Amino acid sequence: MDQSNNTDYIVVKAKENGVQVIGLTRGHDTKFHHTEKLDKGEVLIAQFTDHTSAMKIRGKAEVQTKHGIIESES
Image 1 (tube, rainbow, N blue to C red):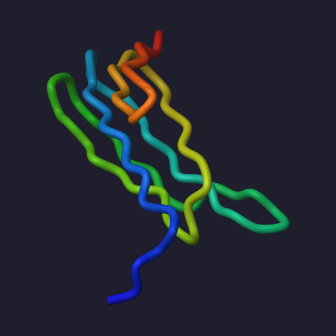
Image 2: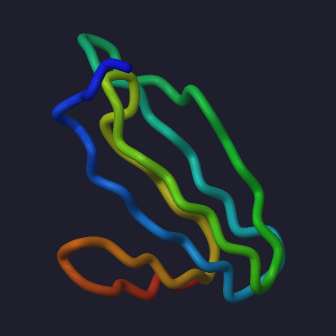
Image 3: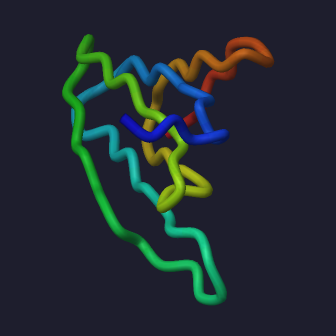
């Protein structure tokens, strides 16, 4: 199994229905490549990879990273 240097994870816990987590690509042109929709109480664990350089979160959620906990607003 190939171990990537991009092994950072985030945890997203939805605080309301309809929270969207959108993965953005790496490379010359940044594009949306994956979207997940979470309902209140659902948790998503996501990893940054060779293809995913950023994540956009829409809606009210708690985001846990190695840098701390961030609360997004709706």
